[in-house]
Image (tube, rainbow, N blue to C red):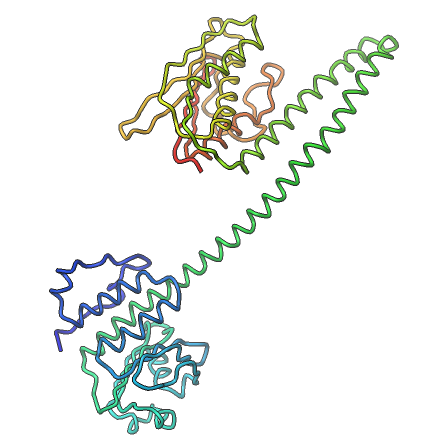
Amino acid sequence: MHAPIRSSASASTEFGVVPPLSSEAYSALPPTAARLVRAVQDLSLAHSIEAVREIVRHAARELTHADGATFVLRDGEQCYYFDEDAIAPLWKGQRFPMEACVSGWAMRHGEPVVIEDVFADPRVPVDAYRRTFVQSLVMVPIRAANPIGAIGNYWSQSHRATDEEVQVLQALASTTAVALENVRVYGELEKRVRERTRQLENANEELQSFSASVSHDLRAPLAIIAACADLLRLTSADALDAKARELLLKIPTQVTRMSALIDDLLRLARIREAELNVAPVDLTALAHEIARELRGREPERAVEFVAPPSEPVEGDAPLLRIALENLLSNAWKFTRHTPGARVELGHFAHGDGVRTFYVRDNGAGFAMAEATKLFTPFRRLHHAADYAGTGVGLTIVARVIDKHGGRIWAEARPGEGATFSFTLGSAR
Protein backbone atom coordinates (compact mmCIF):
# COMPACT_ATOMS: atom_id res chain seq x y z
CA MET A 1 0.00 0.00 0.00
CA HIS A 2 1.05 3.60 -0.51
CA ALA A 3 1.78 6.27 2.06
CA PRO A 4 -1.22 7.15 4.28
CA ILE A 5 -3.66 9.69 2.86
CA ARG A 6 -4.55 12.19 5.55
CA SER A 7 -7.64 13.64 3.91
CA SER A 8 -10.71 14.72 5.90
CA ALA A 9 -13.60 17.08 5.23
CA SER A 10 -11.00 19.43 3.73
CA ALA A 11 -10.68 16.97 0.86
CA SER A 12 -13.64 18.73 -0.72
CA THR A 13 -14.46 22.40 -0.86
CA GLU A 14 -17.43 22.69 1.45
CA PHE A 15 -20.67 23.34 -0.43
CA GLY A 16 -18.65 23.86 -3.62
CA VAL A 17 -17.18 22.01 -6.54
CA VAL A 18 -13.71 20.49 -6.39
CA PRO A 19 -11.85 21.44 -9.59
CA PRO A 20 -10.81 18.42 -11.69
CA LEU A 21 -7.18 17.43 -11.86
CA SER A 22 -5.38 17.34 -15.17
CA SER A 23 -4.50 13.96 -16.67
CA GLU A 24 -0.84 14.65 -15.84
CA ALA A 25 -1.69 15.32 -12.19
CA TYR A 26 -3.73 12.12 -12.01
CA SER A 27 -0.93 10.05 -13.43
CA ALA A 28 1.46 11.43 -10.81
CA LEU A 29 -0.76 10.25 -7.93
CA PRO A 30 -0.63 6.79 -6.34
CA PRO A 31 -3.66 4.71 -7.49
CA THR A 32 -5.45 4.88 -4.14
CA ALA A 33 -5.00 8.65 -3.90
CA ALA A 34 -6.18 9.13 -7.48
CA ARG A 35 -9.33 7.07 -6.81
CA LEU A 36 -10.05 9.05 -3.64
CA VAL A 37 -9.60 12.37 -5.43
CA ARG A 38 -12.01 11.25 -8.16
CA ALA A 39 -14.57 10.26 -5.53
CA VAL A 40 -14.19 13.63 -3.79
CA GLN A 41 -14.70 15.47 -7.07
CA ASP A 42 -17.76 13.37 -7.93
CA LEU A 43 -19.27 13.93 -4.49
CA SER A 44 -18.77 17.69 -4.77
CA LEU A 45 -21.06 17.61 -7.85
CA ALA A 46 -23.74 15.37 -6.32
CA HIS A 47 -27.10 17.08 -5.81
CA SER A 48 -29.17 14.05 -4.75
CA ILE A 49 -28.95 11.22 -2.26
CA GLU A 50 -29.12 8.77 -5.18
CA ALA A 51 -26.02 10.32 -6.75
CA VAL A 52 -24.16 10.15 -3.42
CA ARG A 53 -25.17 6.50 -3.01
CA GLU A 54 -23.82 5.51 -6.41
CA ILE A 55 -20.48 7.21 -5.79
CA VAL A 56 -19.93 5.98 -2.23
CA ARG A 57 -20.82 2.30 -2.64
CA HIS A 58 -18.42 1.83 -5.56
CA ALA A 59 -15.61 4.04 -4.28
CA ALA A 60 -15.60 2.43 -0.84
CA ARG A 61 -15.02 -1.03 -2.26
CA GLU A 62 -12.48 0.03 -4.88
CA LEU A 63 -10.37 2.10 -2.45
CA THR A 64 -9.46 -0.96 -0.34
CA HIS A 65 -9.96 -3.72 -2.93
CA ALA A 66 -12.58 -5.24 -0.65
CA ASP A 67 -15.07 -7.97 -1.58
CA GLY A 68 -17.99 -5.83 -0.54
CA ALA A 69 -19.02 -2.39 0.73
CA THR A 70 -22.18 -1.01 2.35
CA PHE A 71 -23.50 2.53 2.64
CA VAL A 72 -25.48 2.85 5.87
CA LEU A 73 -27.66 5.77 6.94
CA ARG A 74 -28.92 6.48 10.43
CA ASP A 75 -32.71 6.43 10.67
CA GLY A 76 -33.58 7.46 14.20
CA GLU A 77 -32.42 4.57 16.39
CA GLN A 78 -32.00 2.23 13.46
CA CYS A 79 -29.30 1.55 10.90
CA TYR A 80 -30.64 1.56 7.36
CA TYR A 81 -28.46 -0.37 4.90
CA PHE A 82 -29.13 1.98 2.02
CA ASP A 83 -27.02 0.33 -0.68
CA GLU A 84 -24.12 -2.01 -1.28
CA ASP A 85 -21.56 -3.21 -3.83
CA ALA A 86 -20.49 -6.79 -3.11
CA ILE A 87 -19.68 -10.19 -4.58
CA ALA A 88 -22.89 -11.56 -3.01
CA PRO A 89 -25.96 -10.02 -1.32
CA LEU A 90 -25.51 -8.48 2.13
CA TRP A 91 -28.25 -6.43 3.81
CA LYS A 92 -29.39 -3.85 1.25
CA GLY A 93 -32.75 -2.29 2.20
CA GLN A 94 -32.78 -3.78 5.72
CA ARG A 95 -32.93 -1.97 9.06
CA PHE A 96 -31.33 -3.05 12.32
CA PRO A 97 -31.38 -1.49 15.82
CA MET A 98 -28.41 0.74 16.54
CA GLU A 99 -27.30 -1.44 19.44
CA ALA A 100 -27.54 -4.67 17.39
CA CYS A 101 -25.10 -4.05 14.52
CA VAL A 102 -21.52 -2.97 13.93
CA SER A 103 -22.51 0.16 11.98
CA GLY A 104 -24.58 1.21 14.99
CA TRP A 105 -21.57 0.73 17.26
CA ALA A 106 -19.41 2.90 14.98
CA MET A 107 -22.08 5.63 14.93
CA ARG A 108 -22.78 5.52 18.69
CA HIS A 109 -19.08 5.74 19.53
CA GLY A 110 -18.07 8.01 16.64
CA GLU A 111 -15.01 5.94 15.77
CA PRO A 112 -13.91 3.25 13.27
CA VAL A 113 -14.33 -0.49 13.99
CA VAL A 114 -11.74 -2.99 12.69
CA ILE A 115 -12.72 -6.67 13.04
CA GLU A 116 -10.51 -9.46 11.68
CA ASP A 117 -12.89 -12.32 12.59
CA VAL A 118 -16.58 -11.47 12.67
CA PHE A 119 -17.40 -14.71 14.50
CA ALA A 120 -15.06 -13.89 17.38
CA ASP A 121 -16.08 -10.31 18.18
CA PRO A 122 -18.95 -9.67 20.65
CA ARG A 123 -20.01 -6.52 18.75
CA VAL A 124 -21.04 -8.60 15.72
CA PRO A 125 -24.58 -10.06 15.46
CA VAL A 126 -23.31 -13.46 14.34
CA ASP A 127 -26.65 -14.76 13.07
CA ALA A 128 -26.87 -11.91 10.55
CA TYR A 129 -23.45 -12.83 9.17
CA ARG A 130 -23.76 -16.63 8.88
CA ARG A 131 -25.47 -16.50 5.47
CA THR A 132 -22.94 -14.01 4.05
CA PHE A 133 -19.42 -14.33 2.69
CA VAL A 134 -18.02 -11.92 5.31
CA GLN A 135 -15.01 -13.01 7.37
CA SER A 136 -13.46 -9.60 8.20
CA LEU A 137 -14.67 -5.99 8.14
CA VAL A 138 -13.95 -2.36 8.84
CA MET A 139 -16.71 0.18 9.59
CA VAL A 140 -16.17 3.95 9.75
CA PRO A 141 -18.75 6.55 10.85
CA ILE A 142 -19.88 9.30 8.50
CA ARG A 143 -18.95 12.32 10.63
CA ALA A 144 -17.36 11.85 14.05
CA ALA A 145 -19.69 14.27 15.86
CA ASN A 146 -23.33 13.18 15.65
CA PRO A 147 -22.72 10.59 12.92
CA ILE A 148 -25.38 10.40 10.22
CA GLY A 149 -24.31 7.07 8.76
CA ALA A 150 -21.45 4.67 8.23
CA ILE A 151 -19.42 3.03 5.47
CA GLY A 152 -18.47 -0.64 5.81
CA ASN A 153 -15.97 -2.75 3.89
CA TYR A 154 -15.93 -6.56 3.97
CA TRP A 155 -13.53 -9.37 3.01
CA SER A 156 -14.34 -13.01 2.34
CA GLN A 157 -10.99 -14.12 3.76
CA SER A 158 -9.31 -13.16 6.98
CA HIS A 159 -7.98 -9.61 6.66
CA ARG A 160 -7.10 -7.01 9.25
CA ALA A 161 -7.68 -3.55 7.79
CA THR A 162 -4.51 -1.47 7.81
CA ASP A 163 -4.24 2.05 9.20
CA GLU A 164 -4.04 3.36 5.65
CA GLU A 165 -7.24 1.58 4.64
CA VAL A 166 -9.04 3.01 7.67
CA GLN A 167 -7.74 6.51 6.89
CA VAL A 168 -8.81 6.27 3.25
CA LEU A 169 -12.31 5.13 4.20
CA GLN A 170 -12.56 7.83 6.87
CA ALA A 171 -11.54 10.43 4.29
CA LEU A 172 -14.29 9.15 2.00
CA ALA A 173 -16.76 9.22 4.90
CA SER A 174 -15.83 12.81 5.79
CA THR A 175 -16.35 13.93 2.21
CA THR A 176 -19.62 11.99 2.10
CA ALA A 177 -20.80 13.95 5.15
CA VAL A 178 -20.21 17.21 3.27
CA ALA A 179 -22.00 15.83 0.19
CA LEU A 180 -25.02 14.77 2.26
CA GLU A 181 -25.17 18.23 3.82
CA ASN A 182 -25.05 19.71 0.31
CA VAL A 183 -27.93 17.45 -0.71
CA ARG A 184 -29.93 18.68 2.29
CA VAL A 185 -29.21 22.33 1.42
CA TYR A 186 -30.05 21.80 -2.26
CA GLY A 187 -33.27 20.09 -1.25
CA GLU A 188 -34.27 22.99 0.99
CA LEU A 189 -33.43 25.50 -1.75
CA GLU A 190 -35.45 23.59 -4.33
CA LYS A 191 -38.37 23.41 -1.90
CA ARG A 192 -38.17 27.16 -1.32
CA VAL A 193 -37.97 27.82 -5.05
CA ARG A 194 -41.04 25.66 -5.66
CA GLU A 195 -42.92 27.41 -2.88
CA ARG A 196 -41.83 30.83 -4.12
CA THR A 197 -42.87 29.90 -7.67
CA ARG A 198 -46.26 28.82 -6.41
CA GLN A 199 -46.67 32.07 -4.47
CA LEU A 200 -45.70 34.10 -7.54
CA GLU A 201 -48.16 32.20 -9.71
CA ASN A 202 -50.92 32.87 -7.17
CA ALA A 203 -49.90 36.52 -6.96
CA ASN A 204 -49.99 36.85 -10.75
CA GLU A 205 -53.46 35.35 -10.86
CA GLU A 206 -54.61 37.75 -8.15
CA LEU A 207 -52.97 40.64 -10.00
CA GLN A 208 -54.74 39.76 -13.23
CA SER A 209 -58.03 39.55 -11.37
CA PHE A 210 -57.31 42.89 -9.71
CA SER A 211 -56.46 44.49 -13.05
CA ALA A 212 -59.74 43.34 -14.54
CA SER A 213 -61.61 44.59 -11.48
CA VAL A 214 -59.89 47.97 -11.61
CA SER A 215 -60.59 48.30 -15.30
CA HIS A 216 -64.29 47.63 -14.94
CA ASP A 217 -65.44 48.15 -11.35
CA LEU A 218 -63.67 51.50 -10.84
CA ARG A 219 -64.18 52.99 -14.28
CA ALA A 220 -67.93 52.34 -14.28
CA PRO A 221 -68.65 54.45 -11.13
CA LEU A 222 -66.33 57.19 -12.46
CA ALA A 223 -68.30 57.36 -15.70
CA ILE A 224 -71.54 57.65 -13.74
CA ILE A 225 -70.10 60.40 -11.52
CA ALA A 226 -68.90 62.35 -14.55
CA ALA A 227 -72.24 61.94 -16.35
CA CYS A 228 -74.24 63.03 -13.30
CA ALA A 229 -72.00 66.06 -12.81
CA ASP A 230 -72.49 67.07 -16.48
CA LEU A 231 -76.25 66.61 -16.21
CA LEU A 232 -76.40 68.64 -13.02
CA ARG A 233 -74.32 71.41 -14.59
CA LEU A 234 -76.53 71.54 -17.72
CA THR A 235 -79.91 71.42 -15.94
CA SER A 236 -79.43 73.03 -12.56
CA ALA A 237 -76.34 75.23 -12.62
CA ASP A 238 -78.44 78.41 -12.57
CA ALA A 239 -80.18 77.26 -9.38
CA LEU A 240 -76.89 76.88 -7.52
CA ASP A 241 -75.01 79.60 -5.74
CA ALA A 242 -71.47 80.53 -6.72
CA LYS A 243 -69.82 78.22 -4.18
CA ALA A 244 -71.90 75.21 -5.30
CA ARG A 245 -71.10 75.90 -8.95
CA GLU A 246 -67.39 76.08 -8.09
CA LEU A 247 -67.59 72.69 -6.35
CA LEU A 248 -69.52 71.23 -9.26
CA LEU A 249 -66.78 72.27 -11.69
CA LYS A 250 -64.17 70.41 -9.62
CA ILE A 251 -65.86 67.05 -10.18
CA PRO A 252 -64.75 66.55 -13.83
CA THR A 253 -61.20 67.53 -12.91
CA GLN A 254 -61.01 64.96 -10.13
CA VAL A 255 -62.67 62.31 -12.31
CA THR A 256 -59.99 62.89 -14.96
CA ARG A 257 -57.27 62.64 -12.30
CA MET A 258 -58.73 59.41 -10.93
CA SER A 259 -58.98 57.95 -14.43
CA ALA A 260 -55.30 58.77 -15.04
CA LEU A 261 -54.38 57.08 -11.76
CA ILE A 262 -56.28 53.93 -12.81
CA ASP A 263 -54.44 53.96 -16.13
CA ASP A 264 -51.08 54.19 -14.35
CA LEU A 265 -51.93 51.40 -11.91
CA LEU A 266 -52.97 49.14 -14.76
CA ARG A 267 -49.81 50.01 -16.67
CA LEU A 268 -47.71 49.20 -13.59
CA ALA A 269 -49.42 45.80 -13.22
CA ARG A 270 -49.02 44.96 -16.90
CA ILE A 271 -45.32 45.81 -16.90
CA ARG A 272 -44.75 43.30 -14.10
CA GLU A 273 -46.42 40.55 -16.17
CA ALA A 274 -45.15 41.59 -19.59
CA GLU A 275 -43.04 39.25 -21.71
CA LEU A 276 -40.18 41.20 -23.27
CA ASN A 277 -39.78 41.32 -27.03
CA VAL A 278 -36.12 42.29 -27.29
CA ALA A 279 -34.88 44.09 -30.40
CA PRO A 280 -32.61 47.06 -31.23
CA VAL A 281 -34.19 50.31 -30.01
CA ASP A 282 -33.09 53.85 -30.96
CA LEU A 283 -33.67 55.80 -27.73
CA THR A 284 -32.75 59.11 -29.39
CA ALA A 285 -35.38 58.71 -32.10
CA LEU A 286 -37.95 57.73 -29.47
CA ALA A 287 -37.07 60.76 -27.37
CA HIS A 288 -37.47 63.20 -30.30
CA GLU A 289 -40.85 61.65 -31.10
CA ILE A 290 -41.99 62.05 -27.49
CA ALA A 291 -40.69 65.63 -27.38
CA ARG A 292 -42.78 66.52 -30.45
CA GLU A 293 -45.87 65.14 -28.71
CA LEU A 294 -45.10 67.14 -25.55
CA ARG A 295 -44.70 70.35 -27.59
CA GLY A 296 -48.02 69.63 -29.28
CA ARG A 297 -49.77 69.48 -25.90
CA GLU A 298 -48.33 72.84 -24.79
CA PRO A 299 -47.63 74.83 -27.97
CA GLU A 300 -47.39 78.06 -25.98
CA ARG A 301 -44.26 76.86 -24.14
CA ALA A 302 -40.70 77.27 -25.43
CA VAL A 303 -38.62 74.31 -24.26
CA GLU A 304 -35.19 73.61 -25.68
CA PHE A 305 -34.82 69.86 -26.23
CA VAL A 306 -31.43 68.24 -26.88
CA ALA A 307 -30.81 64.56 -27.75
CA PRO A 308 -27.60 63.75 -29.64
CA PRO A 309 -27.50 60.54 -31.73
CA SER A 310 -26.75 57.27 -29.94
CA GLU A 311 -26.22 53.64 -30.90
CA PRO A 312 -29.32 51.44 -30.54
CA VAL A 313 -29.82 49.48 -27.33
CA GLU A 314 -31.28 45.99 -26.91
CA GLY A 315 -34.69 46.14 -25.27
CA ASP A 316 -38.47 46.09 -25.55
CA ALA A 317 -39.44 49.17 -27.60
CA PRO A 318 -42.97 49.72 -26.15
CA LEU A 319 -41.73 49.43 -22.55
CA LEU A 320 -38.72 51.68 -23.14
CA ARG A 321 -41.03 54.22 -24.76
CA ILE A 322 -43.19 54.19 -21.60
CA ALA A 323 -40.10 54.80 -19.46
CA LEU A 324 -38.87 57.67 -21.66
CA GLU A 325 -42.37 59.21 -21.82
CA ASN A 326 -42.51 59.35 -18.04
CA LEU A 327 -38.99 60.75 -17.65
CA LEU A 328 -39.35 63.38 -20.38
CA SER A 329 -42.87 64.43 -19.39
CA ASN A 330 -41.62 64.84 -15.81
CA ALA A 331 -38.77 67.03 -17.02
CA TRP A 332 -41.21 69.00 -19.19
CA LYS A 333 -43.58 69.43 -16.27
CA PHE A 334 -41.02 70.56 -13.71
CA THR A 335 -39.54 73.21 -16.03
CA ARG A 336 -42.95 74.88 -16.43
CA HIS A 337 -41.98 77.83 -14.23
CA THR A 338 -38.35 78.02 -15.44
CA PRO A 339 -37.30 80.76 -17.90
CA GLY A 340 -35.19 79.23 -20.68
CA ALA A 341 -36.44 75.71 -19.96
CA ARG A 342 -34.10 73.00 -21.20
CA VAL A 343 -34.51 69.20 -21.32
CA GLU A 344 -31.78 66.83 -22.48
CA LEU A 345 -31.44 63.12 -23.19
CA GLY A 346 -27.73 62.27 -23.10
CA HIS A 347 -25.47 59.27 -22.78
CA PHE A 348 -21.89 58.26 -22.08
CA ALA A 349 -19.92 55.02 -21.95
CA HIS A 350 -17.93 53.61 -19.05
CA GLY A 351 -14.59 51.89 -19.42
CA ASP A 352 -16.29 48.50 -19.15
CA GLY A 353 -18.49 49.32 -22.14
CA VAL A 354 -21.68 49.86 -20.12
CA ARG A 355 -23.61 52.90 -21.34
CA THR A 356 -25.39 55.28 -19.03
CA PHE A 357 -28.31 57.35 -20.34
CA TYR A 358 -29.69 60.37 -18.54
CA VAL A 359 -32.60 62.81 -18.73
CA ARG A 360 -31.60 66.22 -17.38
CA ASP A 361 -33.64 69.38 -16.85
CA ASN A 362 -33.10 72.81 -15.32
CA GLY A 363 -36.44 72.89 -13.50
CA ALA A 364 -37.67 72.73 -9.92
CA GLY A 365 -35.34 70.00 -8.73
CA PHE A 366 -35.64 68.49 -5.24
CA ALA A 367 -33.63 67.87 -2.07
CA MET A 368 -31.49 64.73 -2.26
CA ALA A 369 -32.62 63.80 1.23
CA GLU A 370 -36.00 63.04 -0.34
CA ALA A 371 -34.59 60.97 -3.23
CA THR A 372 -35.41 57.61 -1.63
CA LYS A 373 -39.12 58.38 -2.08
CA LEU A 374 -38.90 58.94 -5.82
CA PHE A 375 -39.56 55.41 -7.04
CA THR A 376 -42.20 54.53 -4.42
CA PRO A 377 -45.81 54.67 -5.68
CA PHE A 378 -47.85 57.72 -4.61
CA ARG A 379 -44.87 59.47 -2.97
CA ARG A 380 -44.67 63.03 -4.25
CA LEU A 381 -41.95 65.64 -3.63
CA HIS A 382 -44.05 68.59 -4.82
CA HIS A 383 -47.60 69.72 -4.15
CA ALA A 384 -50.20 68.42 -6.61
CA ALA A 385 -51.54 71.97 -6.96
CA ASP A 386 -48.15 73.07 -8.34
CA TYR A 387 -47.38 70.08 -10.52
CA ALA A 388 -50.11 67.64 -11.50
CA GLY A 389 -49.55 63.90 -11.65
CA THR A 390 -50.47 60.56 -10.13
CA GLY A 391 -47.25 59.80 -8.24
CA VAL A 392 -46.84 56.47 -10.09
CA GLY A 393 -44.83 57.49 -13.17
CA LEU A 394 -41.33 57.05 -11.71
CA THR A 395 -42.33 53.72 -10.19
CA ILE A 396 -43.27 52.61 -13.71
CA VAL A 397 -39.90 53.82 -15.01
CA ALA A 398 -38.03 51.90 -12.30
CA ARG A 399 -40.02 48.75 -13.07
CA VAL A 400 -39.19 48.97 -16.79
CA ILE A 401 -35.48 49.56 -16.13
CA ASP A 402 -35.34 46.68 -13.65
CA LYS A 403 -37.06 44.39 -16.14
CA HIS A 404 -34.27 45.23 -18.56
CA GLY A 405 -31.62 44.27 -15.99
CA GLY A 406 -30.51 47.87 -15.41
CA ARG A 407 -30.68 50.40 -12.60
CA ILE A 408 -31.86 53.98 -12.22
CA TRP A 409 -30.84 56.77 -9.87
CA ALA A 410 -31.35 60.51 -9.52
CA GLU A 411 -29.36 63.63 -8.63
CA ALA A 412 -30.84 67.08 -8.02
CA ARG A 413 -30.78 70.33 -6.09
CA PRO A 414 -33.82 72.49 -5.29
CA GLY A 415 -34.31 75.13 -7.97
CA GLU A 416 -31.41 73.81 -10.08
CA GLY A 417 -33.03 70.92 -11.92
CA ALA A 418 -32.72 67.15 -11.78
CA THR A 419 -30.89 64.36 -13.61
CA PHE A 420 -32.28 60.85 -13.87
CA SER A 421 -29.62 58.33 -15.00
CA PHE A 422 -30.16 54.73 -15.99
CA THR A 423 -28.40 51.73 -17.46
CA LEU A 424 -29.80 48.78 -19.37
CA GLY A 425 -28.46 45.29 -18.79
CA SER A 426 -29.79 41.89 -19.83
CA ALA A 427 -33.50 42.14 -20.51
CA ARG A 428 -35.59 39.53 -18.72
